[in-house]
Image (cartoon, rainbow over all chains, first blue to last red):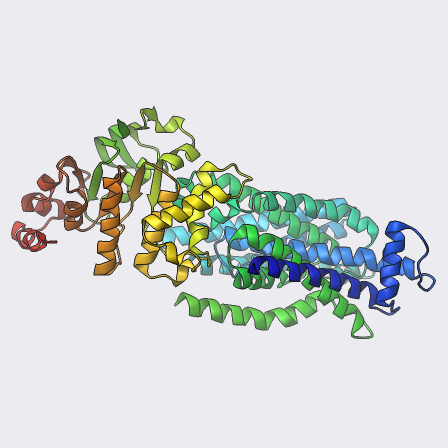
Length: 338
Length: 257
């Protein structure tokens, strides 16, 4: 069966990418050494690997790989959820301004020197306020004036996003230029370089917690793609379902933004590509989107930390890749709509 | 037995009553056409019947129970809504779309199983669309899409079908295909309610003596009666605000339809 084949390939690609990523870096570890270290860690015995390789593997690359994979999966899943929610294949956390809202919350948290959990909380509040504002403006304009809802949403996202951007700029301007400003700037670029086990302990449960409702409701979320009256006539409490999806997707985005800054395009491009591959049905779409989103982010991060002398922030790479892909997607969507 | 009943119902929105004092009983095997000019409130009436819009006054009941006391899922299992088919936003397959009708039968966390799939396939078979099961809905023609929407309604195993202008924007051949399907379903004991802009369709689907037509005029005047009565040129002329001989001509033309 085609679907099973696609899933098997995606799982294989994810495992392969994890192995490659564990081995690649300034201190290369061969695939055999990686496997021997991993089996030693799980089943005991001594690994046939250089000294300190286990430290690099489990304390440096391991957490970073876990973070990259989780963030990629979360951003892609949030993107898929938003696309269904807004019935619009061209939206995602970053286009909707959710990422900017979360970033503003997080920057304020850094500004006030709060602990990570508080930074995550602020990121969540910022993201949720942004998505609520955009949803209200977009839907009321579309309803009141019969405008194209798709266009209105994207425009309100851009507008709210730039307002939030000015908030971020103001916070940076006011920040301590020797201490906080570099931290904010570096972090806003999006990076997994400074992710520690401690960050993961806070962020991973949040991401997993937010993913659970989406996974559990993944078939029912299809109904949100229907016009409201149709979904309600099928007995669906649209408001409650929509609220669950908004909160979950925003929580995932905020948790991701809080540990690694804004990384754009993944949430837009991955679900869209997966939809072209296996169709829009959400219960099939969501798990594959998570898998491919995680793998893709891991690939981007691995390239970013290994091709050049300095690290290339993943946001830079995804934007460089994402822009042409987005233009192509828009062309394809409009051509299809005609 | 009465499936759906309206007792002195007023329909409308928060600040405006559109039509008042509508009383109506629908049983299995009944057909009701809803005619009226643009903006007269046909869709408002459908939305009220579906429980999407609370009546401003009066009582809507399903199987002798007030609609306000019935869960949305239960309404969804009894009355199925066939919207005007649009291309939709995503590339769902025909089977995916039809299976969505199983939502009112499933718990929040469930996915359609083998039995739901069989029901969906059977529904597609009933409207002659089984061959298109794996196609994407946005690749279908308007008529095919409308039949898929009807199949979706059938897959919810409801006893009553509410269709909103089921033949709007369809070509002549597809129109007849959809109308014949509606007639077949009625003969098999389903209650069929539909809005239309074409009096001839009311005549075609509501062909039994017992079948009625409901007309809403722009000023909210509702008349429910035998279809032949509602389609008299004089009645139509009043309803649409045109001169009588215009309808004399059009109705006579369609007599052979």
